[in-house]
Image (cartoon, rainbow, N blue to C red; front, side, top):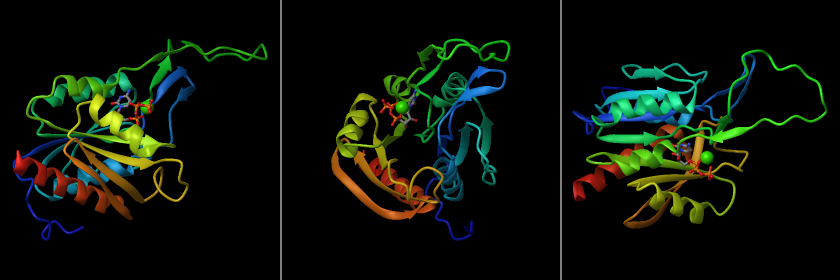
Length: 224
Ligand code: CTP
Ligand code: CA
């Protein structure tokens, strides 16, 4: 969209966004990942930049090109994503965790390509850190936003994440739906905050979801 027309209501603000999947190596040729396209996080970064923010985008591997004027930090694994987000956390005013972080990674990546053999093999996995939870624990001036990807009990599960992770806002979306979400240019979401009841946003472009997100955040921080 047109920079000339965008309101500059994020001028002087530092916005830190994560996007895309993480990719966790199994061996030199194989990996664990998920269906995240990165489109939601990239739309958030683009809208923030257009509205005048200084934007850092920490992104797992995607097919997207970074929005104009956004500082892109490419990462692969959850541990790398965590390290980069922690580097930029202290300076940030708004932190928006749109990445789909792998909850588990292989205990170790095999040095050599794993050869096939027996009918059944085990692949031991270990928990990745919950990056957003840990950012919540050390929150100061930052306004912290998470996403919840659910396939059932959307609002109940999302509410729990909002409180557990000490978020100021949570964007909940139903990833079981085939028509929206992963890979799509559109989304339908609920915005949850600790202080008000869930706000439904009817299906719209990810750009418009991003616009609404910043409208809500700015309204919230004015009230602080
Ligand atoms: N998240 C994170 N680090 C992880 C897992 C998730 O920072 N290791 C963040 C995501 O970026 C998202 C939020 O936490 O903003 C919720 O992610 P989601 O996968 O919906 O929830 P989880 O807390 O991982 O719980 P579960 O997958 O068991 O539902
Ligand atoms: Ca998860």
